[in-house]
Length: 353
Image 1 (cartoon, rainbow, N blue to C red):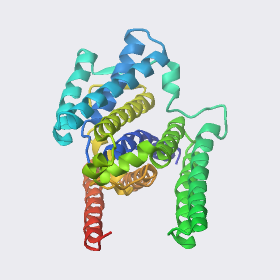
Image 2: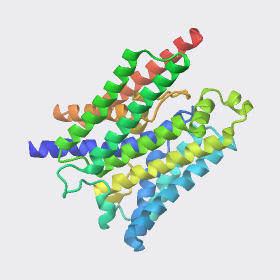
Image 3: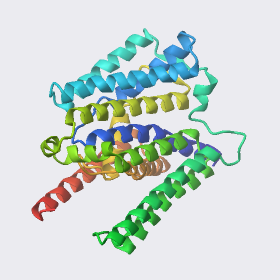
Image 4: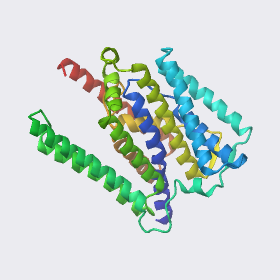
């Protein structure tokens, strides 16, 4: 039982990396674009961090800062090709996937695995042993839930007071209850597997930040506008080029965060890119409700998506299914989610919504 719990707990710790990448994917999907390079970028940035820390003797903060800066530069380059030169994002990021994979091999200089010994970096994805309950791991997800529920209640009350159209009270209650079950249920689940790891707290902190960014700032409203209709957004005075560059930059920065969490969990970086990392990240966003066609989705969609993926993986592991079965089922779930999104969008177009 102990070994099984540790194994299942490690599966859910891995969801922090998938969630970080999925959050980045959400940003570009909101624009109706795609980023296929995030898996390569994630591993490349973790290699940058490891090389700075282990080979060059840099401090943990310098190494982590270098990894995040590398992600920002890569994302900015991707965004420039897509937004300024008008090259399709599929081609740009597919080329990046291949090119960045070659670059990380160059940085490793023939070494298959580079061990990380920096204590601070190794502690990022861990669970504090001095606490029975990790205050950071329990507090941040709970704070995120309270902010989300409070925002729903505030918007509902304000729209009712102004006489505007709003959702019904039963729907509001259902949304809050579902969020409570997903978030607090996850906390309880992690706590049962030897505590809530720091990586999960970091992920929920990022989700809260980007949820506020997308829903409470002009930048977020502009992103939804560009994803809904780029030409109409441009005529309304929105800087479409700048929004696209910013989205790809933030996507790669979040991929770098995912790479840092992955390296911390594995205590090393390697030359191999996890084969299902890209699929899992996109699946987490799409299964959670982010549209592949742009203009619809939420940062909180990642929570639902990664929980479904993690639950599938856990269930199949308990059934002693091999990797080939797991990948086929995950691909089928992704296909069903995309098909549902396409059909729903077509029905909405017919009804004029």
